[in-house]
Amino acid sequence: MRPRLRPVETIVVPDPRHGKVLVLRDTQGVAKGHAVLPPPLIPIVARFTGRLTCAQIAKEASRELGDEIPTSVVEQVAEQLDQGLFLEGETFERALDGVRKDFAALSARPASHAGGAYPGERVELAEYIDRKCMEAAGKAKKGALIRALVAPHIDPWRGAVGYGHAYGALAASLESDEDADTFVVLGTSHAPMREPFALCDKAYDTPLGPMPVDAAFVSELAAAADFDPFADQLNHKREHSIEFQAVFLKHVLGKRKGRIVPILAGLGDEQSSRKDPRKTAAVARFLDALREGIAKRNGRVVLVAGADMAHVGPRFGDPEPHDASKRSALEKTDRESLDLATQHDARGFWAHVAGDLEERRVCGLAPIFSLVDVLDDEARGEVLHYEQNVDPDDGSIVSHAALAFRA
Image 1 (cartoon, helix red, strand yellow):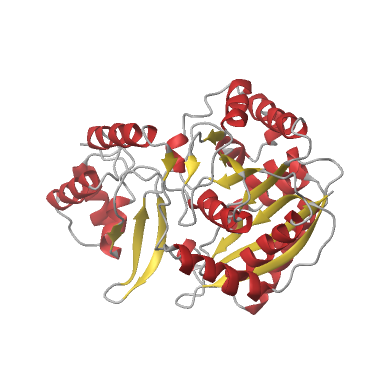
Image 2 (cartoon, one colour):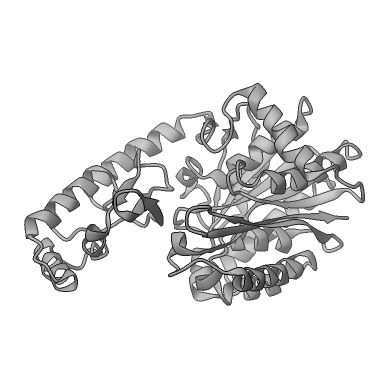
């Protein structure tokens, strides 16, 4: 057996017994739980690359730890991760096939984070958004109609004020924009994708009621794409970046009708190579089709990107948290990126963020780039809010912002 770990999310979290542990999270939504690895197991699992046998892993890990690790221990860890669906192989493929079939049969994508990342009961959720988000952000100023919005996708408990600024501004705009009824929602895919974008042809359910999907628009985009835009549709199952936007959109719209076009933006090859996405023909064709689809709907479309900014600190693999000086420098760099976006410079934004992607780990790169790229040329943006959310346990930071583009 040559165990190979699936491409799952890894984070370091505090633990009362071990000090810190490594948590494996399946952002694709196949595994039902998390895997928690105490420090002694990390040198073992780090070698689950599919290259080494369990005996070879035991030998290398023993050398690193300075203590003998029996092959049986490695085999036991591999078996547990295999049963937990964290390893590639037949066990995972069988489970994946079943999950795909179950998801395909659904008419609406369930609100998978309701009751966890945000209140799961209708009244409580509405009150939370009104009081902790909208009121906390203050009354939004009125201006030209909003054609695009960047909102956080950090959980609404921590990102309440940021969401309040974004959706407070949108609510004020919609008071004067009676025609806006379609919302193209671009979200970060935290799970790996085979293709650059992933469409979803299902409504997004929320505790406030479902956000219907614009099936005709989705079909148009699918027909224009020269890749399979549904190849990664399963990534929508557990992805929160679009779910949180659907919740806030449903709240802002109230009884008013509205539809969404859910698109996960991966651009994985372009991010890993730092390549301008417009130089990939399939990406350019999809973005052109999106821009054309928006234009022919007579300005009734609002673009929304669910996108966070930097992820730094011990939780994300850095040796220590940022001090005040580094936090200030981070904000300066983040704002430089955001300024490029608000100036409608999609390629400049891409290059600026891609330049230090391994250090800042900006997970909103693909959706923000895509939004700015397809946005009407006359639309110009402003930063409504910027925030660094600091973890109280280890000082790790997730930064996020609210941007409005008006025309």
